[in-house]
Image 1 (cartoon, rainbow, N blue to C red):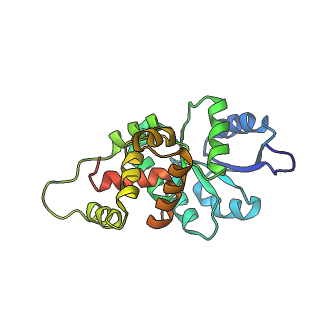
Image 2 (tube, rainbow, N blue to C red):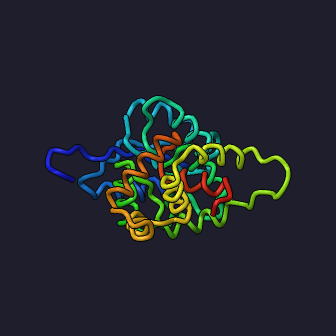
Length: 226
């Protein structure tokens, strides 16, 4: 953290007190991160966000009253929402997909090493997706079924309609994101600088009205382009 820069404020939401305690211990030892509060259920999220003004919410999926997906959708639909990192295991793939579509900045497996949890919080606070390319590919492989050859498919049609509005170069970058490529890999593959790739990604997010590159990847998969 640079001198004078405030720490990343984190709210931990999980119905397991041991998980909350473990995450608080991990993040509490990092000067650039401040755990500002905890919640035990999605129903407590609106009040907790209003009270603590977090930059990032670590959100469990499975909670007894209001699950993390419902809480994430409501939170991200509100004005000026905090970023959301979903806590999950890979037996919840479909739920993770729903969370990402709702605007979550990414997800963490509950057995993620402490250093990676800290790095993920930093990245999502900076507006970057927290999925590595390998994890992006694995997630999409698990949760995206091929579009049917015939018959209506509203999601596929919507995705294709949105992507049809892109320039040829923007479309190439979008497809590369759908393949889980890093900025450096896209740079080498499309013969442009990393700075130019970043500019294209920012342009895609604005043009498609999406929150992060993971949502671009999902849109490309919905369209059947990868």
